[in-house]
Image 1 (cartoon, one colour):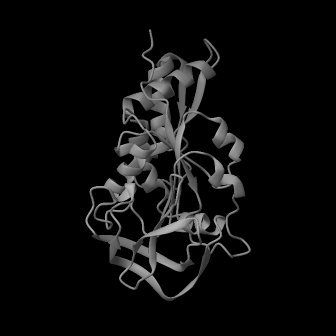
Image 2: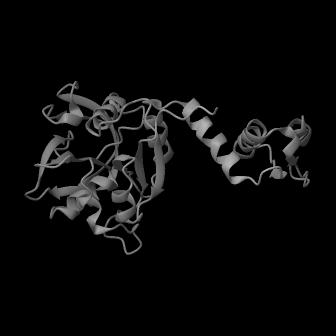
Image 3: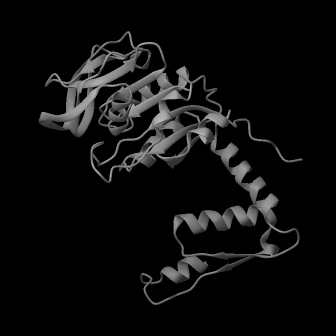
Length: 270
């Protein structure tokens, strides 16, 4: 009998185009919580209607929230009733949603900085009053409005973190997912604890779920064609197919189109 995965809960990561989107994904999984990267404009009824979603993280992004081509999002995103962490661009969306003001600061902040932190915020639990973080932004929070309170400031006195007065909604202008933020993993862990995550996810869970889905979605007794380029994605796909339904049902095909590296096709076939 197939062993069922122990973890069905997950964190929804809404991607606003950040170069660090997959890094957020990896950091959450390293903390033994499953995560799924989804478009920023994912319908709120999808997010609200899935009880497996324990919380939401909005990634950073290269756009200004005032750009005409800025990534679109649903205005009721912050009314889900689930804990939410906005990172960089995500914090600016949070601020705009609650009547705050976002604009160009006098100085752009790029690189490591030592920020002053209000450790009464639950996402800063266990941290020092001064923390080294990575900042990379042109727009800043000019005025947080009446519903958000400031929880951190940069060395240039620019708002570096906010939280809602009464709801579990948080924003950080820096990037907790990168190594240049010294205690970023602790910040993410604090947020996941607020979400009520069980910290039970393992890669074995993910593999077993993938094997189960393959068995469910492939026609019984029929062969499956798998195109193998030799890259990570197709190789993992091939291995999972072989494990799930057996080598007698999997036909792997690799095409040497003449643009492979020296001896690469031989390595793929081997």
